Length: 316
Image (cartoon, rainbow, N blue to C red):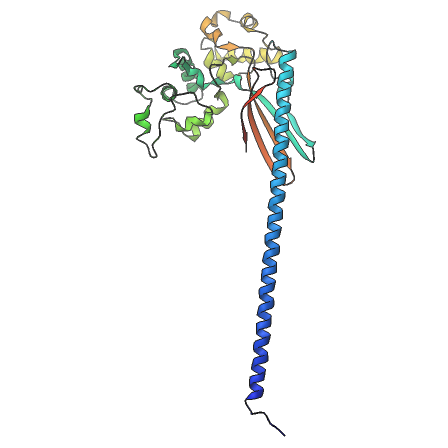
C-alpha cells in the first residue's frame, strides 16, 4: 500500500485552488469584455439613431423654410402694394405634427430694422445714414460715437476717424486682425468693431440688420425706436400715432403715409427717401423636432425673384 508524502495533499489542494481562481478570472474577464462590447454597440446604435433623428429634423426645417418661401412668393404675386404683419407671412405657426415629428415657426421683416450696410454709398460713408445710426444708438442708450467706429470698419482703407479705427488699431490687438473694409454679413460682426461688446450688440440687435447693399426701412413694420431715428422731426407722441395708425390700416405707399401724418411738414424729402411700405428681405425662423433631435433654423430670404432665394441659412 502506497502513501502520499504528507505534503502532497496540501499541494493538490493548492493546485485546485489556483485553477479555480484562474477560471474565475477568465470568466470575469470574458464578462467584462462582453459587457464592454454590448455597451459600445448600444452607444453606436444610439449615435446612429441620434444622427438619423437629426437628419430628419433638418429635413423638416428645410421643408419649413421652403414653405416660408412659397408664402412670400404668393404674397408678392397677389399683394405687392405693401408689406404688413397682418398679411399671411406675418402669421406665427405653432408646433404642428409633421412626418413623425413636429415643426413650426414665424417670419419677420428684416427691413423693419435699420440696415448697417446703409452706411456705405458707392464705397463712401453716407453722412445722412451716419446721422440716423447715431440717433439710433442714442435712443438705445449707447454712445453715438460707436457709429464712427462702424463706418471706419466698413469703408475702404484710409486714415481712421477720431473715435474710429482702421487696420493700425486692430493689428495692435491680441490677437491682431484687420478691419473688414466691406459690408458685413451678420450683426454679430459688430463684436469685432472697436467699442462694441456682447452687451451692446445684444441691446442693438432688435433694431438693426445686415442686408446686402442699400435698403430702405419699411414704415409698416419698423419699431418705434427705428422710426424715431429715421424721422427726427417727429415727436415721440407722433411716432406712437404712426404705430397706432398702421396697426389699424397699413400705409399703402409713401403718399398715403404723408397724408396721414398729423404734421406732414415734419417729413422732409430726405427723410421720406429713406422709407418705404414694401420689403424685399425677410427672416424665417423655424423649430423642428424628430425623435431625440431638437433644432432651430434661421434663413434670410430675398424676395427679388419670383421664387425667393436663400441668402444664408443657419442651424442651431
